[in-house]
Image (cartoon, rainbow over all chains, first blue to last red; front, top):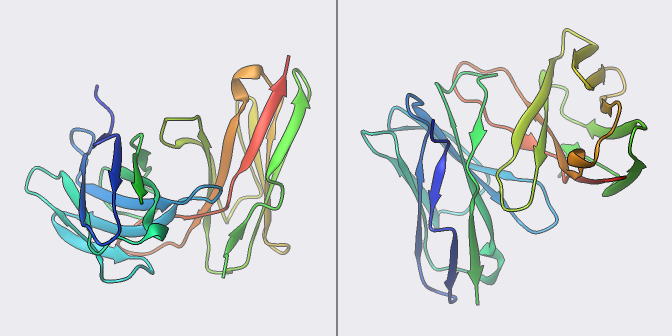
Length: 114
Length: 114
């Protein structure tokens, strides 16, 4: 069974550009969460989507947005990139979005902003 | 404000000995705690969890202890194996009707020496 997949693996952008990161959850999983992991720190929650609806939002500026599609895949969009957006972006999927529902993480997309 | 802290950024242990990883939290609303393990170029993988109604949970070589009064949890790995060398993250969540947002600590890098 395929795990959570993310694309692209690596990405280099310049300040001011925008970026779209993609995530495909494990088959049968209906919830997708996004986390940002800055070097040397733990992952930080950005968004959670369940059945195409936003179920949670972390403390990130409006430059960050996301959506979930009917097939439960998801996109994370970041506009007006800043140097500080350089990080590993992790996607996690779970069956539903209930508390204590185990989350399975993808390998991440490494974003470098120059 | 970091709600989950792992004060030891790294730990070195001899193969066969015990590894003890510590985690402190400040939010008394947290009622579910997890440990994740992360290898380079991979996403975090779930190791073990504990509910706030328990003070110990064991799974093979991994045991998690929770001290609610001290807002402290620890992960014991016995015996440690070279394959355990990885970064370990402590995470916590609050029971809620919708959403399973995780709050992570900064991680502890474990090196198990043969």
